[in-house]
Image (tube, rainbow, N blue to C red; front, side, top):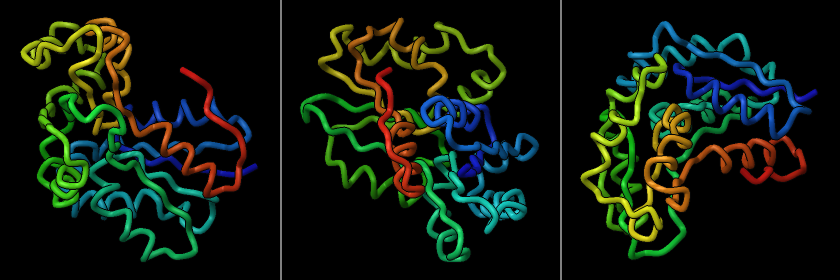
Length: 219
């Protein structure tokens, strides 16, 4: 059985691992969630790399694939891990690039640490769309603690007048834990609202890296 390590520092990593197991039960998923250093990993790329390396050291070279399920760490350190440990396969979560109507406004839900990176600025330039970056650091702890509510969601998004038809605005999730509130977002703003998550793309990339055939089920 193929072995995949999923590394993160929040419940978002658990969500990704859950979906990976559901879609491909033929792989063994090893969850390495560094809860203790969550705040540091989510805010400091340099220290995040050091902590991730320490947490992953028992698995490097001993598993088939390591998935870095953390946006900040992926966009700042994935190349480092691939270069440093050439005998170990690594993949990470990439910022999702929208592929639908160009006239729709894009709201990117992310954190301050991600938005401050050069990789994020290059991403905005590359997609060439009308975008609004929404810094939502306060959401991560509330979602992690299970206390995030509709009022928290609306306090941040109602001002954008998102149409229930989903024809004016799209959301991009640039934090793994935000996937936990996709049902709530759709309940509040309509099930036609286009929400871009990197989970499916990353799972496809993982299966390609391991030579596993099959397709993702429709959600």
